[in-house]
Length: 413
Ligand code: DWN
Image 1 (cartoon, rainbow, N blue to C red):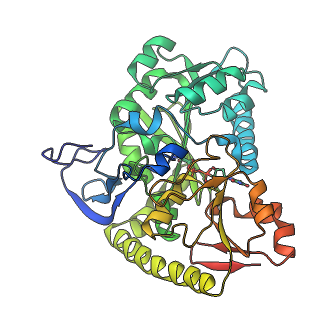
Image 2 (image 1 turned 45 degrees about the vertical axis):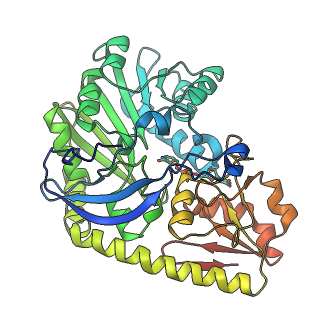
């Protein structure tokens, strides 16, 4: 944890003008699922302050209480390929960039935070050279075994020294930049790794979507920054890069923007799109928006818990659908435990047989969902709503119902 005597400063611009916007309290690490023996031990798992700050200088919304990254990422539970939606998304991503840059076997694509290699497999299939950089040993090993060369380390200047300056025609980093503590050091290393005519493509949840849809459950200790593209563009400029384009994916992780950055003047800029994005941030991602977000989370908590308690009082059986990292935040912030959810199911092998930290709800194989025949399923993996409702059509047709939490708790079915 950040030593208490160090004055917090903005991760992007270094300013000390940080204002507290939302304090979620002491919460466990979102992906630190408990194994059976831990869950039986009554000693409480580690909890850390979860507080969001607003930088009055560059407007970056960010955490200031930093948990040691080794505790969160050295051994990781999340796998990209556990949702068909993600497989389709990343295949299109690789196709788009391969065509845009006419990539060939001579080109190298480096994916930072490559996880199970889902994106790199899609590039490799199209004939490009690929290299993953993944700090979680358990996941790097898995990607290597599936034919994706992967360096097991946190990306930084040593990675650039190992790979070579300006060697990457494409550098990607998806749902990674938000997780980076030393944001300036990270961008500097990307700039050094990127070829003069190369593209840095990265995806992050867009702060305007997070605030618009009140998705407070994606606020957790891994996510240090909640990006607006204006403050991020200012970091790029410090290291000779510039934003040249953006693409908005409203249905991915509740609202994602893919940014494209390059060395100065290497590519034409989509100035209109950039101006529109900056304008929306100006209007919808200021300190007042953050305060509204915080107040809404408290109202949401009362509304969801009242609905669930009413259903339990009526004798209904309720389970959770999906054990995403965000479920840890939603369930702990709302104090939803096994008195309400009998269990949750998840398709990720690493997670099955474990327990959600804090509330200690067991995570079961999806087969248990059909066996249990619940009346309701709380859709914790709400960002895959379409895929899941389609997959569970039979459950719905037989009278089962989903509770979709965002933007407001809604019963579907
Ligand atoms: O930024 C991050 C995002 C991209 O991924 C990381 N910090 C951690 C992780 O967050 P998450 O765990 O909230 O991601 P997902 O992709 O929303 O997790 C969905 C979970 O739901 C997975 O554990 C798989 C599971 N799932 C399922 O059980 N049945 C998913 C689908 C589609 C299903 O049908």
